[in-house]
Image (tube, rainbow, N blue to C red):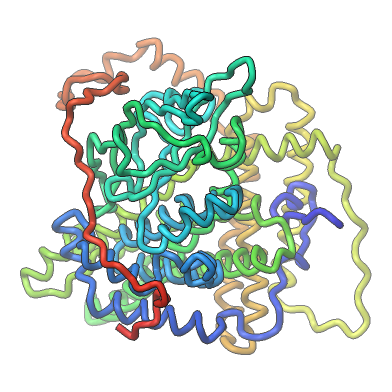
Length: 598
């Protein structure tokens, strides 16, 4: 059996495998009737019954909203029916995220933290039949959270302070530690906990994964975090003090923690591109309406070139983001190529461009973009939550792998693969097929993308030949990764436009403009590869670190509270438990979630 090939990885080989992104015949937006019906029920509920301003004001998702989402099956979309879930496709799940996120971003995080990186995916991928039967039915109405990050070590697995000590006589592990920024942790029923198991004479130990019941003695929520955006996010500090867990609650073998964590991330990586696409589509609607309604000297501001340029950029990028989600998700389900690397590029592209779009929209709306929706509504205008939108979108460049960490991770993967495969070998030009369709503007963009991929491969070979490249050219490697992300979006946009052409002729126009914009950004990144200020920047930063320019900090006041930069362990175990217990309705065994018309 041939190993699946990644479109994104092939870009670093100088190849443009357009066949890997080609969608099947028919309208790519179509879904089975069951999935369309589910999405319509979810859409109707979100549009009619959820008060987004109340979530923002109270900094919490009401209990009744969480329970109704469970009733609709929104918390178990991909969970197979044998365990009580909906058994729907990953693409349906991503479209559901787009719907709820367009109402309030914390709703998208509630669903994604439970289904993308919570308990469901690790158990489906690595759980034993006994574990699956014991825990997956609880995920239909129970909420799960993934506990990895720690106060002193971030989300790196190599220095975990949380420990799990095996008692071979009792057949249990005892967990101790503190987890930071655990999304859904404040309301979770089940936790997926990463912990370090000390090696013994008979066991290898290492980073391992455990299912922990949130009601177990010793589990508590020390602190509920609040953030710049994502009001309503139930994120907090989880305390584990002498928590006893049966040995059969370990997922996988001892030391398999990294594999479990990465696999769970791979399956959920498209969650952020999906919510980014939703935010871009919403931004396009607001930008279009405002540019047509707002008058300056008697004419709509959309006629002004600077405003028109912003709207064109938002529209073209919104199309590209939707294309990336639709193409990558369908390919993942059809298993036509290895989409793990592609999903990482998609996450990078989505995080950077959704923030750019949010900033453009805020600028376009001016003072009304900076004013809160509730304030605008109170003085009689339509309350458009642009400032909330910008605050919510900004997290995409930080969590689930920051932009900088993701560039480094992808660059390392590329250089490692280059070491295994050797220098890039350019394929011979493919002969013209007899009776081939006439060339289109999309073919021209693919030609430019192919030439860019060949340059990308040459620079990758050059850096791989330099033994100090990983240390001395980190920003250069990052630019190569950014180029690949743009080229991946170009390929997805062309494939999506071709599939949509018969149904939405304007899709080709959107793809055309996006490709022109993206390929210009690619040229700019290439130009900065050798002509940049990287060395000067690094030297100046070192001078700053060595207190060489302290005088520049004079004349300002630092009002931040006293305390350590990083919290020391252990925390005060006498702190009250802040866990929020959502009152839960029970569902009869014969009832399937989502059948109510609500």
